[in-house]
Length: 339
Image 1 (tube, helix red, strand yellow):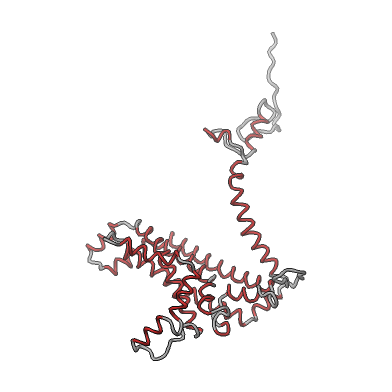
Image 2 (spheres, rainbow, N blue to C red):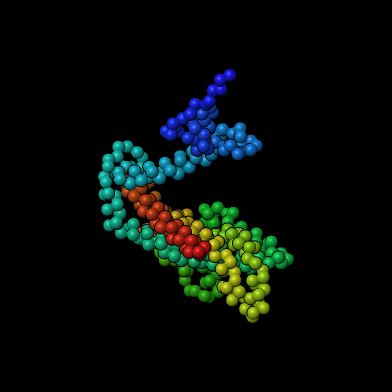
């Protein structure tokens, strides 16, 4: 009886990732299975019967939403910034960098940029510190503390338009604030809260702070729960007072949350619109002196008669670059803090 030996392969025979030659029985099938997306051979349970495209199917609504409402508008805005497109549509011609050249020489653009940056410079530090102090006050489980937590959070639930109208009523020349100040003989005439350009900007900042305190207070309440109590007790034993414990124990313990709050507040400050519109009117203060970048984009891009969507898109790209720079700076500070 003659014994047949298996055919030998030359040195050039392909070998799969698992050590099986492709020419051997089952070798090609294993190679295809190794290259095809899907569960590995050591997977168990339902993963063995799951198709490779099934996770993409579950993620497809989110991917489509991000593409339609995020990626496409951004790319379209970037493309429009090189044209002279009109807000109501129609033929648009390519103008190259003319919109960006015009933007760099536009005094109104730099005024809006100054207001946006000034808004962020003042609001961000206050929004980082004040909610933290508020969270420290309401952190303790005292009788009736739930009422105060709810009261501080209530402005977050109110509409920005409703809050703006309320502040407009309070700060008008015949409003509650001016009436009380005059009756108390603190001032002789009404303070022009809603007619002076600097006062409008400061009042808008106050409105942003008042409405955001409760929201970021929740962030800090969650972070304070992760600060070990032993550190406070050890500092108290060493003779540290409440102020020193706050700066040397509480602040380092919630530093990551502070950077997050600063980033979110900075992005929101650069995009502020409603507060300026409600307190300064449709012109953005007297002569447009309080317009921020979003307010300026609305004026130059969306006017049906004189608007230029291409120029407004260029200003939008500038706002995006400014916001991106702030975000990258915050990420760098976060990495340095983690290191």
